[in-house]
Length: 465
Image (tube, rainbow, N blue to C red; front, side, top):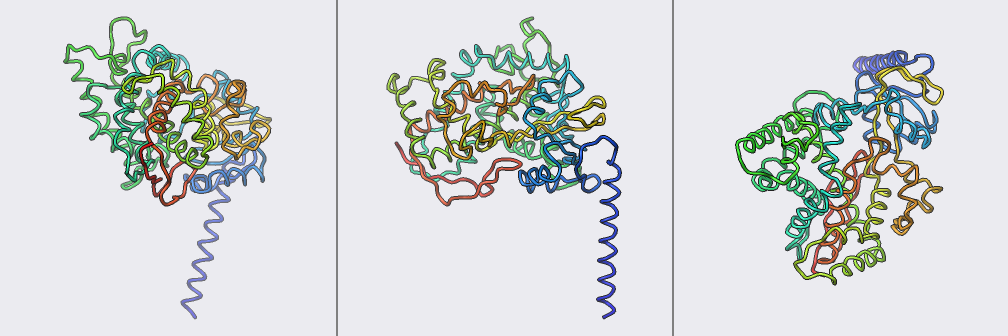
């Protein structure tokens, strides 16, 4: 009996202490003018609930506090905006006290020189250098031939196999980008580079706690290993007289054509950014497109008809060209509808550089603002029957240009690699649907937050078409 009383006493004491800590943390942020909301635990905040519950956490908070509320996620005091008009204002007004506000883990692992982290004149210079790499002219003349050559080889000999399409699209997205970045060396560094890169990706969306075994520690260590790989690659190229017509060659060029001469550190962070941003969107969109096409035979039939029409105009070994890519209107619609329905990107982060007023509330300097765009993708006024996979809705060009089309970001931060990513996914789908038919094996579960993924893989049985 005495032991039971002690256990009960300890439990009550712990409960009282937890309640006191939570109350103290709430009082810290009960400043006049702040939006309503809860802040959770010190340091950790509500990160666990945010990552585990995802959209349900957001819906519950909105039901309690409205579409503009405070929280503490990924190590930062944060205001969440779920209001479409306000989100557009935030994205379009970076010069008015709002700059990128990515979590510390992302800044540490992707590097402080990456285009997503810098702002003002530095962002303009970095964006200019990046846009020159992936302009329509570059895609047409240099990148599309590399993409076609890679996809043609990568998608060979898949017939009569059971494959994990999630793993395959991850490999595809990484290796395709690496070939565009460093054509000659991509094969020799891929085996060493790829596992480190996958660790880096996992670390970018984690609490910045530097302890053994954490995703943050593994991600940061992976960054250090990648710095060595890329540093050695850059040094080899400096010692070589050979000219390289790839992204790394352009970034290293010193002939006056590159308006802003980048340092080695800036080049490395640019490369990591290109790999990271392209990998996440291209791999996941490709996987989910395969999933949705399997589940919607009429869409697959229409897509295959478009690509078979292109193949009929070509010899068997003739590559996809710019005009072919431009003619893939239904393919583009499938990509947009996949991105919308799967919600590959849930939102973007901004940070206040000064105390400012938003939506009638005062936001302190240094706070993050999470522009949560997920709900817009399911708005029945914008997308009738929003839970249906209907690529035909995108055949009207007006939908792609409307104000709330934020699948690829918005304002000055719209994804600069949008068209390159579409080119990669389109070429992947071209060779996949013209060569193969497939059926799912196992019906694995899908998670859609914080990343879209199949925890146990997404297995398909592939056969020749």
